[in-house]
Length: 287
Length: 166
Image 1 (cartoon, rainbow over the protein chains, first blue to last red):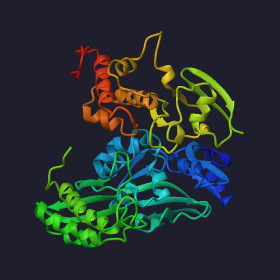
Image 2: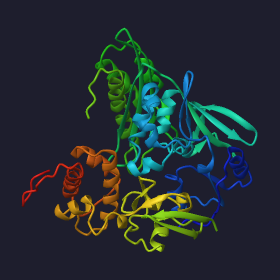
Image 3: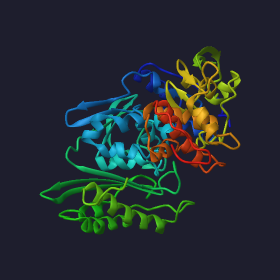
Image 4: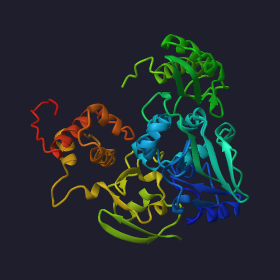
């Protein structure tokens, strides 16, 4: 299938990209194109202008920024998976990124593109939510920072205003935490029926703090707050599986061809328990 | 219309293209019809090529996004009249029936092996996750990739007639 015609711009600065997006209310930013190009091809999206961000310097790569990592929006999933800083400070992001689609898509698809597309079944939104990341947004009125908890507004909708570009993601260093991403999908390269991003901090052998981000349990990624609170003091996998079971109450899961809402709730409870136990190092991870 | 410059299998092409043209359609217009349009939904991987050395689904890349890049297709695999070890292994191992997925399988496999010259069977299956074959059931494809990997590492193996693994 062939996309509808559009004007194509490849600005060489962030300012020019913002100006181009602001000049046409039906303009769309293009990062790696792994979500946008399929939408164009199916004509589910028909922007009049496509603003390709690939010519903008400084949108790619991972930098150490004190107590956080600053990850450029155009950093590909493939790069996130292999980045040594990500591995050291927020490995959850790499664990989620390596489950995205397939190698060819991971070569092109970007962190910023995935977050700005905001598919509720996507893996990375749940991970950045659990990590407490912040979005660096550039727009016609200057720069602003949006916490992940306020970034995802609705199905395929973010807090980005017309003309705004997601420039980078700041991910706090959670050095010493344990992480696990648990994804259930029906076939290879499929979207998550439910995905669970878990982060756990232990003190003296017991769990001191835990975070759980859920994919595909609502029109936006959600935290499983009750499950998180129930993790405090957990000393073994059994405790964490019991705490994780509370994730079934989170969100407002959809019913679709991949599963009903009840089934998703069941999955969320089981997978959250498993993800927490594995993140805490209290249950072996199967290869 | 935007001007683009793409090097395909070592030959440079300068063209004006519509911004909406997909890379796979551009390649085919250049005569590079070894790369098929498959599912057209980013699922099947039949149109996989290497873009600056990394596998991509050419139905999910705009031709304008490939401006300035180096594209490798299945047509550039053989060299000096000799098949690439992956091509030989696919032939030897009967790793295709209808052949529609084969160009994409070969390109995805070559990406995998340049990254991981000695993959396990599981790693081959993961590396080919984005490529669908509706004929073979994958067993012979995986065996062929393991075979080719061994050959490319210089560890020649003999395949007994009637089966066996590398």
